[in-house]
Length: 390
Image (cartoon, rainbow, N blue to C red):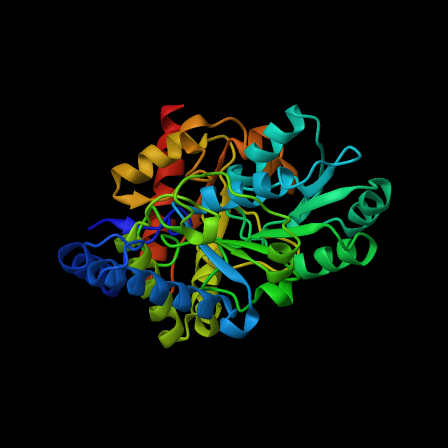
């Protein structure tokens, strides 16, 4: 029987999400922009999902913010970054602050803006901790910070960045800066709200919490909407309040809502870390001699473990483990087919050789202790077997 330990890449779909999607596909086929009853039924499904995702975000109707459904978390972050960058004609050269260990869905759009002349400064995260001294210097060095984009939970190391402190520091000096948080890895697992983070924009995704692939969302705060500090990337029929034209994927959105509802009712945010911490401790206790757990120095999520196996390239170990029916990864699934040396692991403090010999193990609150022990035993066997071949 296969052992799945790649939950940071994607999660199995919850039965509730699959059921509601099947029902939508079979029975709710209207266009949600149509005003007849079939269209209104589809619209109702979309709006119900919107309420549920907002509720899991802790941003209900009284918040006055807006949730825009997108085709993925990547699209949501692109909307946040390019939407803010394109919203004004800047009088002076605009600057953007971020970290040196962002997900490709943030890093690559920022590189594109750099090629257009934007200043992008990456704040160090050595040991999985934001360098607040460097951030403070950057805030005062750049006179026109238009955007700050900091992730909440690092997808390769599990480090939890103090986004609230970072955004507070930025807003105190440059209140007009728009703050964006990629919260994909923390959504449904950590208790936070956009206001607590101090985030004007928040990216979330369905498939990281038991929903379908192909559904993401961007939360946009009321002040950003009122000040018109973000513009759409896709123009057309004006769906999603004009921020994301194109007929909504009703089934996927409904599945997203069902997954959010499950986590709300199950109180997942309160019990997830409590349930997964013992699994991480068990893994650490049973790691083979020579393997090293790259534990962040500050707060970190216990369901993501970065493990360096010196002398064995990650791809070789992944193939061995896969042959044993154990599925892990070597970092972000979004970039694994175009791998160079992981920027995140280098930023963490690993050498190029160490980063090239590092795998990521990620599990859920449903993972069994026996699965952790079987992985540790397979890793031990793999290290011995591959060493003999070499």
